Amino acid sequence: MQSVATFAALLVVAVLLVPLFKRAGLGTVLGYLAAGVLIGPFGLGLVHDAENLLHTAELGVVLLLFVIGLELQPSRLWALRKPVFGLGGLQFFGVGSLLIGGALIFGLDWPMAILVGLTLALSSTAFVLPTLAERHELHSRYGRGTFAILLFQDLMVIPLLAVLPLLGAGSGDAGVSPLVGLGVLVVAILIGRPVLDLVFRHVMRVNSREMFTAAALATALGLALLLEASGLSMSLGAFVAGVLLSDSDFRHELEAAILPFQGLLMGFFFIAVGMTINLGMIVAHPVNVLGLTVALILVKGFGLYGLRLAFRGNKRVSRMQALALAQCGEFAFVLFGAAQANALLPQEMVAQLNLSVALSMALAPLLFILGDRLNARDAAANPVETPERDALPDAPNPVVVAGFGRVGQVLGRILIARKVPFTALDIDHEEVQMVKRFGIQAYYGNAAHLDVLHAAQVGEAKIFVLAIDNIETSLRAAELVRKHFPHVTVIARARNRFHAYRLMDLGVELIARETFRSTLEMTGMVFEQLGKPADKVKQILDRFAAHDIALLKREQALYHDENQLIQSANEANHELAQILEEELGVVLVDPSTPPPDAPPATPASAATS
Image 1 (cartoon, rainbow, N blue to C red):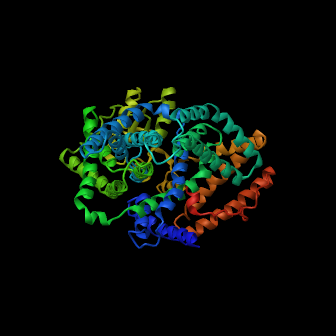
Image 2: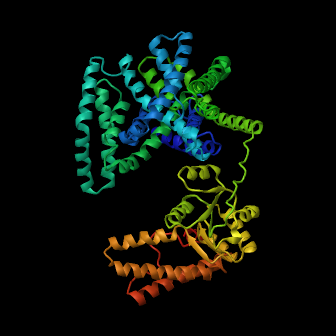
């Protein structure tokens, strides 16, 4: 009963605290650590046996390394080799060298200084990547570089974990030679892939998700235990198992089967680590704990910033990467725990290091805020001048294309191929410069401004093609053209039905919904693969398209009233089913009977086509 009570306490405190920390932008790892501090012996004292919990929860680390291995496809790693090994190696070994020097100054011997320095050089993947995604910066220049560095750091965890049992005296079989472990590892790599492929093909024939999950867990834990018995680490074994399966047909199913166990056990691992953190150390040794925390952030931040500038990195990108990676990472808890278990680091030192690592992670959101403030200050001091509108051609063209992105460029290529002259406008200056390099004449200008439309001589054109991506800008341009150049035919791109309704309100009649035709084409492929004759498929799609276009015009007057719109959509579904059945002999499922678990139709779903 005591174990059940402990398990219940862990779940309750995690459910209460982790969402709060996530919502506050502090990340789930700090939430789990705080939960451990709260219920542990240094908090409320609800749970005392942190060591046993830590040993059980270490399975979460093993499964995490298995998942990392699954995601590490050799082909993908090879494609990213330059930023991963170049930029990642620069950060890890460059900043790690600075931290190793600091560890030596504080009296650690060389092996321990290298271990501590390189471990502290790691940053928090669990915090940084979600933060970049939330800020929509994952695909920015500094975001891509930061991702490459974090990927290299995750790779470096493996050799660090693998070397710990060889250095330690407190774990593993002392009679096992490192050469035996290396031999077992080589054999596993050579024969593992075909053997595992046979195993999982056999399991798939059973067609049981439970058996597949059991096989996935057995693979990860089995190879982990095999390498541990050979004198290496369990984490290395799990990672190798993941890599062996990374290019298999079962990769995604394996990841889906393992993730729930890995996530829960990793949460318990961080709770167990939190239970060992004594916040009283801040009161007892404030200079040591806070000084170490600040020193880590400064060394990691300024270290990476200086290295990036030394290799001619962009100043702003280098600064943002340095601030994003200045905190320490969750793998520090794993590595320091393993070092303590192998009698490499004393318990008191591990406790102080863990506390400083946790504090650095708690300060990470403030570093992002600092980066934003510095960027805003630079922008105010050195404002970027908006490029002036390009000088437009003197002679009018029969076609003016407003918006020369992915839609406008396809149209433009066809017009060029047929030697139809046109004037292309786009508000993205970089996009304009890019298409000019490909020999296409486009002009920088905002088609939602009347003076730009006059300069483009829209009044002398026959057709105004509205291919602007932004809905509000598109509507503003349509309004101006309809008002000031009513004789010009407008052909407009609509992002969705509601965009189409608003264009129709402005008097635009020729509207192309951007996903409508491609979806019809895809539907045709589905019917053909189901064995429908090509002529019958064409009849179905043509009838549907005509019905939907008519429905679009009918619903234009109703789209402001959600209830009427829903009622109209339901009636149209019945009408379409009857038409197809009567005219073409196509029997459809009664639309009044939705499939099990299907949500009711809503205007939101209708708005996507």
